[in-house]
Length: 141
Image 1 (cartoon, rainbow, N blue to C red):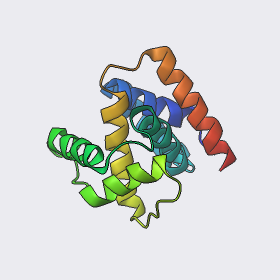
Image 2 (image 1 turned 45 degrees about the horizontal axis):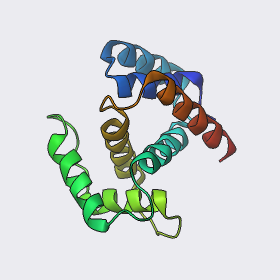
Image 3 (image 1 turned 90 degrees about the horizontal axis):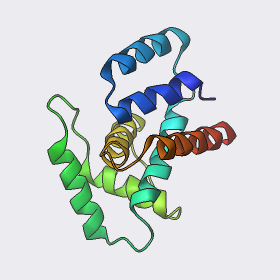
């Protein structure tokens, strides 16, 4: 089960509030990260479905992945392009099979979330609604 701190962690990550993000991260290190991968996956699902749908071409997803890899800040761990494309396709098409290392999946999800939600196109109210929906979904998984 995700906690309010985990939701705040993702919110501050998306908004680029590094000071608050570091503070929340330290708190989560104390209380535990149980449920975070599920919450991150739910936020990823809603973020991807804001940007892509079943009509999105494979080429468009490939360009998106290439762009986020190129724009990743220095020191960001590399993500596997094929795994990223597969995860994005799986978020819009439940029939897509995924067998991706959980650590790689988490890195991909974080980078995609930052790219889609952190570009300034999502207002605070819309971000809060998405995070609330994601937390509700994560609590049912």
